[in-house]
Image 1 (spheres, rainbow, N blue to C red):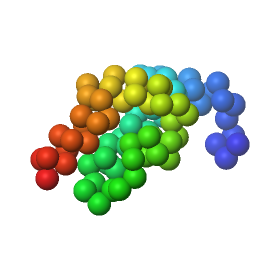
Image 2 (cartoon, one colour; image 1 turned 120 degrees about the vertical axis):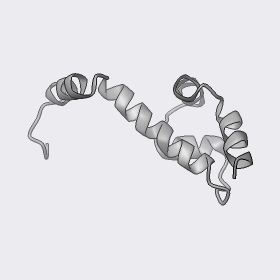
Image 3 (cartoon, rainbow, N blue to C red; image 1 turned 90 degrees about the vertical axis):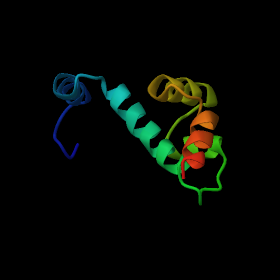
Image 4 (spheres, one colour; image 1 turned 180 degrees about the vertical axis):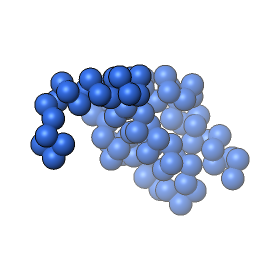
Length: 85
């Protein structure tokens, strides 16, 4: 509404300018948020709560999308990023 665009118009802009779908853009942003939190040694929340906080709706979709984007499971990512610190 604030952009005065219909959803399909915004989707077309994202597709043409960024070369990916709106859904992919949202998923990528969610994964980046999860990665930040998993890399934070002070973060005490469990992985699934972090995923839900970032906007993922199910454990299955979170695990699938996270592994597609990073090549690692969330647990592997957390373990490797915390070991590097």
